[in-house]
Amino acid sequence: MTYRVITATLRARTALHIGSGDGNDLTDALLRRDAQGKPFIPGTAIAGALRSLLTRLAPRLGFAPCAALTGSGSSCSCPVCHLFGDVNPSDEEDSQSAASRLLVFNATPAGDTLRPLIRDGVGIDRVTGAAARAGAVKFDLEVLPAGATFLLRMELRGTDANDEALIAAALAEWEAGRLWLGGNVARGLGAFQQEKLEYKTLPLDRPEQLLTFLKNDQPWQGAQPQDGWLATQLATLRSVAMSGRQSDGVARGWVTLTGILQAEGPLLTNDAMASGTSGFDHAPLLVQWGDWQHPVLTGAGLRGVLRSHAERIARTLATLWAWDSAPDPEHRKQHFLSGCPACSPVESRKDAPLASCDALLKGKIPSDEVVADEHLCLARRLFGSTRRGSRLIVEDAPFAGKKPVLKMMDFLAIDRFTGGGAEGLKFDALALWKPAFALRLHLENPEPWELGWLALVLRDLAEGWLQVGFGAAKGFGRVTLQKWEATFGYLTPDDMPEVAQLESAKQSSGVYTTVQLTPGTPGWQALVQQWVGKFHEKVNDFSRSEKITLTHDSYFGRTDSLYPVLKGGAQ
Image 1 (spheres, rainbow, N blue to C red):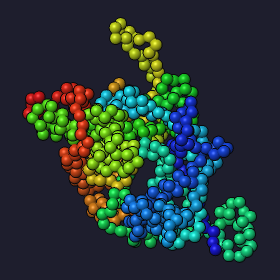
Image 2 (cartoon, rainbow, N blue to C red):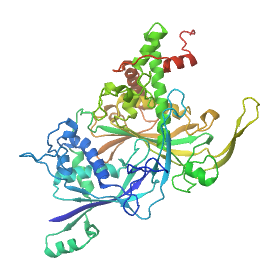
Image 3 (cartoon, rainbow, N blue to C red):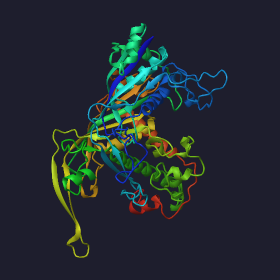
Image 4 (cartoon, rainbow, N blue to C red):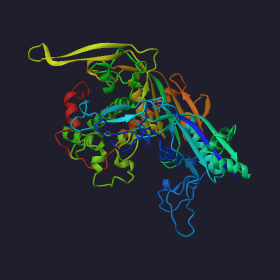
């Protein structure tokens, strides 16, 4: 008999929110804390992330798929259920249901706990581009800052070779930095890096060994690390990756894009805590309390900018399609509504032309049922909704320069009648001058049309068309994407044949083969054009399954009056 344990350190790349489900007068969502008031990561959250990852990976590594993927409600004996316990436990005769063979303990802070912060957020109206005040989508939550570290410990009880191979696959992915825990992951929070991984064993064959083990409150401290355990497991796993197109829930590949967001001038953000302590009306968000050397752009804010621009592109194409498909304005509006690829996430009225997909499905499909693609617009398929999580993660962007430069700026509203300063409307702000931030996007199982859509958005970002922060109408927050690099990961060349055939060096990361591409990579421009073409086809072929009634409050009707469509030099 042998005691086997896995230990590691989890270091947060971004701020994180492990919610308790409660709020108070200070914030809408509090962190989860133990009896001593210290934040921690529940073992259930870690085990859930492990199981979710392995459920998608296992069928590609030569193992039987789990009932969670097939939709079966019967007892399951797949390798993932063998390790974590049956996904559909049963006590019927001949049932093989068993408890988990992997014990995942709460991850406790390593060292002193960093001071929590309060993050603010607000939804954006897709028509006006301003805060969606009518939708009551202002919210805030408590987070731990980036740099927080936690001690991970997992014990193995009665596991076999397949169990260890699966654990190694997941830990290899975490070791490569593809680990996200907690809430609001798609909006920038909860990105982790696994470090100092050790697989340890302690023999318990002799009575004195067992007695020592039972007397020790921390037996993992005396266990001996096994060198090369993870590398040995990975060598076997990479050799058995299964080819062929798999179901939507199974892992196929991913793309991670990194780059530098360089501001061309002043950039204004606002953090209520920083402004309250600094004395300014607006002050930049900081990674940690009082750390003025490390400002940060929130993933939620960046995601909102990218999503809003992506929706604008898609609606523009749909507008052109509607204009070409119908002879008169009323029919054009109906064509636009039936084929609009991007709904409004903050519009909850069913009779609104751009009502959210969730609002249109209310009363038709229960909220706990899986929603098929035909019931979701293209924006919801890529960016997610309340009925389906997003596969696109936009992480918080930390400061990437040498030293931030802060400029104090005064503002004064003008009285439209007198032409002088409006009384009581003076405010000031600390602006960041030409800051640079490290951007990181991650998309799981990307489809060609999704890559084409993101390529169009990132092209405009690289050319300086997008602004972040507030004061965009005043010229603040204009940024450009520089020094970007796209890393594609796939299990077999069949998963991403277009990328795999490019003449670029192949490497290994976790259980995946990776290819790093830059604008100078041969064949890259042609590949992007191919993806953009797929996106155009997807928009042209899209049609909503739910009928939408035309009202006077129409995006199409409002925008074509502001931006007349010209054909052949005439309106």
